[in-house]
Image (tube, rainbow, N blue to C red):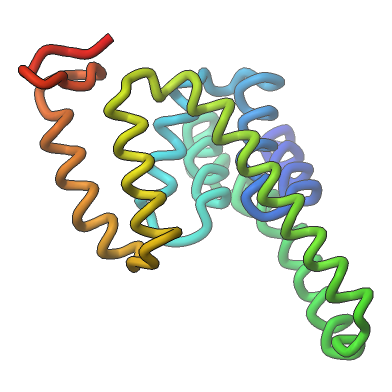
Length: 184
C-alpha cells in the first residue's frame, strides 16, 4: 500500500499537465513493471473514457489492480494530494502577484514544457500502436478537424469515432485495405 501511495505521490508531485502520462508510463511500465505496454494502453483507454482527470483515473485503476479498493484509495490520494496543495499555493500566490510579468512568463514556460512532455509520450506510445496507414489518416483527420477547422471535440468524437469503428470492425488490430484486406 505504501509503495502504491508513494509511487503516485512522486508522480503527482513531479509531473505537469500532459507530461503526467510520460511519468506514469515511465514509472508504471518501465520502472515498477506493474503494467506492460498493452496494460498501460488499456488503462489509458479506460481512464480517458471515464469522467475526471485521466492521470487520477489511471492511479485508481492501477491501485485497484494491485491491491483492490484500498490500493485504489492509496493511488488516488498519492496522485491528488501534491497537485491539490500545489494549486492551492499557486492560487494564493497568483491572486496576490498576478500583475507581475515574470509570473505570466513562468506560466507560459510551464505550458511549453507540458506540451513537450505530452508530445514525447505520444511518440513513444504511437510508434508501437500506430502501425498502419489508416491509423495515420484517422489521426490526421482528427487533427485537422480540431486544430484547423476548430470543430468541437464532441462533434469530432461523434463523427470520427463511429467512422473509425466501422473501418476497423471485424479486422482485429489490422487496418482494412481498399478491398477489405488487412494492410501491412
